[in-house]
Image (cartoon, rainbow, N blue to C red; front, side):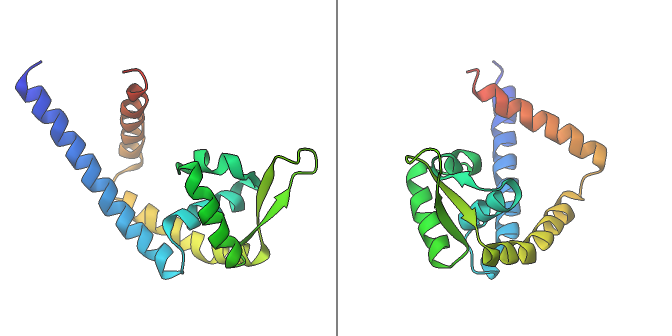
Amino acid sequence: MAKKDIDQSLKLYIVMSRAYRAINENVNKLITANGLNPTEFAVLELLYHKGDQPLQQIGGKILLASGSITYVVDKLEEKGYLKRVACPTDRRVTFAQITDKGKRLIEGIFPNHEQRIHEIMSELSPEEKDIAIGLIKRVGLSVGKN
């Protein structure tokens, strides 16, 4: 493996990491301005768009450790944004369900959230976005192979 190839790989890693951090920090400002942390927002957004979710599965869907889910759900429940609902067919399963208050909050935040992401990504043409999606996805999927 040539040193130049290794250096280029390291540079790509750094550029991707810095870009992700800059984008994330910018997008998260809107979320925190509305009294949520990014994880709380992710849970509410999941429930809003996908409906009730078993607590045990939320972590995998928003990329959060399962131990942290209980804490986040507790906080959102205290704020009145979601409630726990027992599964009628399996006593071992509890669902998180967004409340009307939670729906109103997400409906107030999400349009600005998606618009901000669109503004950031508008630096690229639609064709460039397709290329970037394909390339970044390929790199991400390759990690599981190694």
